[in-house]
Length: 391
Image (cartoon, rainbow, N blue to C red; front, side, top):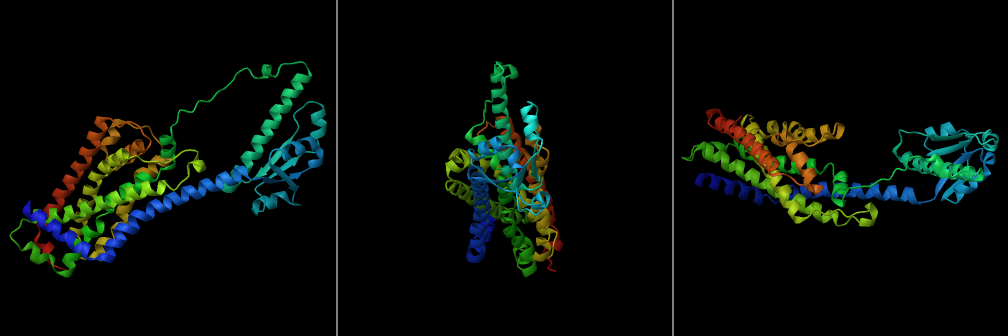
């Protein structure tokens, strides 16, 4: 343990002497993800609120066929404008988001108390057209219900007769659960910071020193090679946890800049939730450091070791992508699958849901057990004589 502690301090001191690398690792990495994520949430929410509240310019074809409908729409924050000569081309070229076409038969069908035809033109593949289309559609549905009720009243019929079932909605979501819905990518960012936060240090401590021919003198000391490797691995894990802690603090700080009026609720991760998230990432930091150390022990240069980074970055991304495409309910067995368990439990913590003791035990023990297996393989590679031979 003494040798392990000495090597751990030596690796951390070497890293902290390189101020440029330290600044990039501890500032750019932990800050970039939270700032980018909060910036995207703010921008998207601001754009949606603006589109939902500002007056909507609506080109109408055949406005003369339904003057009452057109007048009603103008009272609902809709600005009626002249329709383009070729409405289909205007939609395809994105000159217009949505166009309303009133059929020439509208007036005749209306007078006969039959459904009067209307047509909404839009492109469903355009994200920016969905809000205007929903606004127009909801207003037309409201007009339909209002006029239908007036027709029944004019005939002495209670409008409630046409509504045999009354559906009431009761939203049981909490501000925490709504925040968790927005933070779907938070598990990936946190897992990635813990999984690869110490990767650069782990690679440099093995592949880098082997390339610089400074690993051989260290392995020639009386210290056990397993202790030397554990010290290097421990330094990488400590740095990964430090990166994760800074990422969590950056998220908490950045969320405070999102106004509650913009989303309708306040995103606030409590200090207790942050502690839980940090504990969940601890096994991943150890596992990631062990895996990178293992891969570095099989390479002969930093360049070769860095070639594995693209593959390693995909590992924490896979559970997030799979759950986004095919969401599933949390089950106890998932807590025994490293990376997947962290992904699920991080969302539960952010949503303010209770994480059972069995889930905690399985997630932490499975992660540490996998890290132990990788540590044993890496220790075996450290005992090879070829490790001390530079390329």
